[in-house]
Length: 217
Ligand SMILES: N[C@@H](CCC(=O)N[C@@H](CS)C(=O)NCC(=O)O)C(=O)O
Image (cartoon, rainbow, N blue to C red; front, side):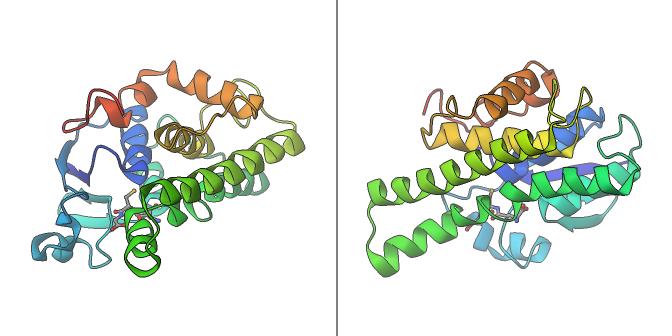
C-alpha cells in the first residue's frame, strides 16, 4: 500500500487529511507544494489536480481531491477507528457541521481569494486579514450555535468519540488562530478544540509542526 499526501504546512484542508490519516494509523509520505511560491499552478501539479488546489491524496496510484471527499474515502477504505456513524441522521449532522467550515468558511479565505482581493480591489494585507477574521468569526459563532442546538457535545462535537466533525472543527480553530481570531467567546467550540489537541493525531498534524513552517507566526 502506497499513500502520498500532496500538501502544504499552512493548508487547513491538508491539515484535515493529515489528522484522518494519523487517527487511522496509516503510513504516508507528504510532499510539500509551496502555495506561497505558486507551485499549485505548475504543470507537474496541474497533472495531479487541474483545480490547482491542495490537497491531493494518492492511494496506490489513484488521485483523490477535495478534503471532504478524501476524508470520506479514508473512512471507506480504512475502517478503524470509525469517524462516521452508520445511522443516517447522526451521519448527516456530522457532515453538516464539517461543511460549515469546509464548504462555507474556508473557501472564502484561501490564497486565490485573498490574491483576487488584492489584485482587483487593492485590498492590502491588513484589509485581507480583516476579511479573513470576519469569516472565521462568523464560522466560530455558527459552529457554537449548532453545538448548542444539537445538545450532543461532550468531549467531542457529537459525544465521546472523535468524528469527521471534530477534524473540521479543529481545522477551523487553527485557521482562527492563524488569523488571530479569539475563540474564547465560543466556549463549547474552544473546549472541543482543546480536547482534540490532546490527541497526538491532531497535535502532530498542526501546521506549525510541519516541514517548512516558521517557528512562530
Ligand atoms: N474545498 C477544498 C479547498 C481546497 C483549497 O482551496 N486549498 C487551498 C489550501 S488550504 C489551496 O490549495 N489554495 C490554493 C489557492 O488558493 O491558490 C478542500 O477542502 O480540499
